[in-house]
Length: 235
Image (cartoon, rainbow, N blue to C red; front, side, top):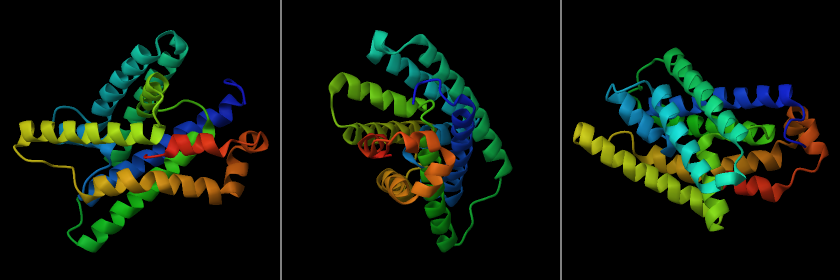
């Protein structure tokens, strides 16, 4: 499938994947057991009242696009840079809208919170599954990891785990500076780091009929499973 083939269907799936992914992210926040790694810094800064969750995510994503361009240099065309920045704005607005709609307090019952955490991870995984299936535009965090892989030739899964750990460490430092304690990081963070990628991989193996309905062009062209493994490893 070429870059600009089937744009309406692929762009719709991409936007829908961002909505679903945002719902999963907010569910992990409401569980109050630790948010997903890439949500840690936006969550902490938003809790401090610096900016909204979506705005902080937008700033973080634009920085990641800049890092990707610096690493890729001429290998990353400017139209792709612009596309990822546009996607960052769209994702930021969607995340804020979802956060507004799902404005409820974390439940006191621990079992319900665990249920929200698990549901959030599954929903996030489904959003990532749809994002990869669309083959449209990578979200900046995934694009940055690809850029590191391009330069270092390291395994994508290891890069994803390393960047997640660095983000969590940075979030812990920011939290200590702002609140004097670590917030937003917990068992949910670890579960999301280790489990979401595995769920996405499982979905690609078992949701073949759904994949064929959503993106028949990609299925017909014998989508390479090894490529998918690289995309989801360590999500």
